Image 1 (spheres, rainbow, N blue to C red):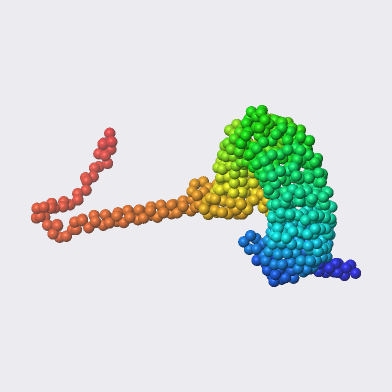
Image 2 (image 1 turned 135 degrees about the horizontal axis):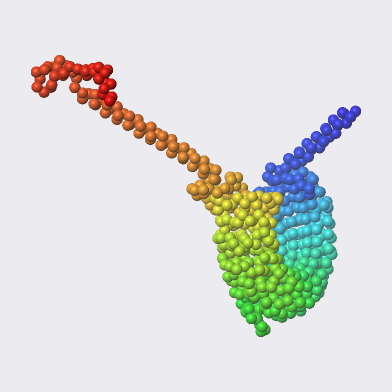
Length: 593
């Protein structure tokens, strides 16, 4: 009985495993499928998908798919329309159809997709949508309709009324100039509204606030707003994040923002603001303020004490600033004293893109910074004598400074509080081995020298926990520039040992082992050649010696009867040999005495 039970359980487990494998393998040939803790994730990002190809893809996608991404690359856009076939995937939680050439949204195409939480339809050609277009999406929380063609037809009143769970809506970059009354009717839970790149009137914007009483984030960047006095922020009292960047604002007044009692983050970048008057933000609790890409540096003086100066000690009076962005304001000099009381609370400062030449001690004196952005300033961005304020930094951005040698002063911070470093877009070829002390380093877009001393950096990159993490850090753009043998290869993909060649190997991308092997082979070849030369020399000398002996033998005079003629006058006769006389023994003994 026990054996039968074990066999039954084994068969069941095998059947389940085979079923699971079949579901995983049942994937369209043009897509990638992966099962995660979130569910089955299907990605089709090759582009060129038409209506016919889309139907084929739908037939091969398992019905239990949780995330479906069909994203067309810029150079190979998809071109298909959407119909009710998408509703067969009732378990779908995320649907991304980006750059797919969708011309419109039909009626009831999403009916029955109650599990859907995210619908991303950006970068299509959608001109119009009706209330029935979103039928069945009562649980949808995030809707992105940015970069479409909705400027051609005004969206009707109540088009989103059935999306009662919607928390975030993006209509950005549709070129819309007018909004219908009660456009956001029914969106009582809406928290985020993104309208960047449209051209609404202040009145139209204000009417939108009426139907979204719980709005906490508003983005109206690139909307050509000239003033804020006509915006009725009192109808959106819960707003805490407001983006007003890249408009035509030339000044900012606290009275215009006065109704925003909960404001904590304000973006005024990309405008034409030249001065921040005293107490410009009094009464607010703003902790993140962006004033980047304005004109504050044009009227700035380190001795700003008179009205009209761009920054004064009272400009940020009573403001508990945590992060301040002053990038690209044409500051030629900067003194932290201009921040006034904000010096006590400021922890992140952006000074990138200003012609400061260097971050002097005056620029950050007395600040307890945790993060400093000093990108695109120049090769001398780091002073020779590093201010003590640098020692507290946990984040440092040095990107785009044309650095060709890593500053030793910054290397001295490794092993301290510094945890994140950005040195991307420079001219660096090597990094200090102490890079291993850092948690996060941005290294992309540098001409890395992969011949020597790059092992610790490569090992550091490979230790990142997953592909997404490495991709976010731009490690696919960390490539070798030299030697030619590995040019344009990613540093992380190098498999050969990155040891240091001793002599010539570095110029040809050879490892130390390869170089030593070549040297050893050369030595053996030299020894063999020397042995051959020695052997040849000995052989030649021996042959010469034999030749000389033979010549002497041939020159000797041979005896013949004529030579023995005693009458010859030239040759004396040979006298017979006469042995020496023999003395008696007694005489011999006498000679001894």
